[in-house]
Image (cartoon, rainbow, N blue to C red; front, top):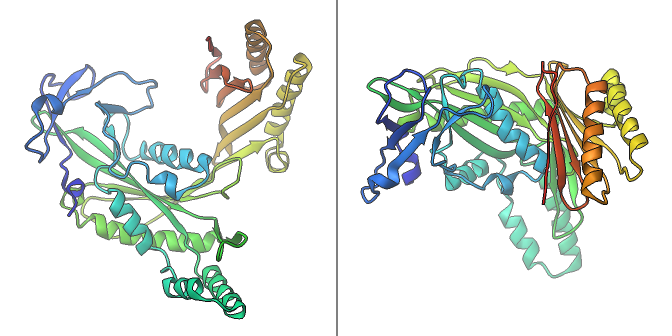
Length: 392
């Protein structure tokens, strides 16, 4: 068994005895590494959070045991961000930030993740690929290419990635220990492949087929993680994520989740999720979110009226249960001096207040060709728009 799989997630508080994390606390993490000095083990739980809805963390930050694997498995940058951040967002329901600390997954290491992904996908036709590599006659090559293409079309690899997150809480005798685990399973909506360095083929994965495969995979993952002693008696949230196509300008979304109680070996019930990220401007936004599309268009037009070097405005709206929760807008502009940046930022602030109601989070980034120049944001329910202009 890999040393990562046996890593205890236990830290002992050395100072405060309060039941909440309301002051900076020095902690020590116990490990099986005898050569590790106590100085190396010293850690801090900080009470500070960027937002009251964020998780506190144990510092120094401990990277995931499978660090970096996600970039090999998911090709769309927007999907990577939403898959990671969305799993944390969903985890706030069973594991409240008021009561839990966040730690990246420490039990599923790189070898385990890659091995399980291969286990949960159809076998690769290695014999057929070897025959194709050895083939010399043109007709034999064409026949094997056709056979290999048919195999891959009929056996798409749907499971892309497995992401683990850990949640810690205070136990008795001033201990902090593992109290919950979230596991995200990323699933393809499109399977892309090529045969013998030929053109890329695309197989669309029906959502119902994807859900069936995802739920079967979740059951197998649950059985395997329950075999790990440290993960037997903690609740586990599992969420299924449907990726967007690799070249899409917005991410996919989580489509269903479940919470499995401590020691349970099977999933009893799934909860459907209604989440979606929409691109502005787009036909989808105009057809399905007309009022939001109109307010975005009004903002964009006023930007273009103000600034002669305007290039275009792109927005991404995150919807939950059909309601807009977050709107992120990028404004690329060609600037010729810092005063132009300052003047444009001031104008953008007034346009944000004019065009967008305050019931959703709003962020506007202003970029030149070489870098980000300014950022403006407003939290849902607030009136004040905060801004920052970057200086050389």
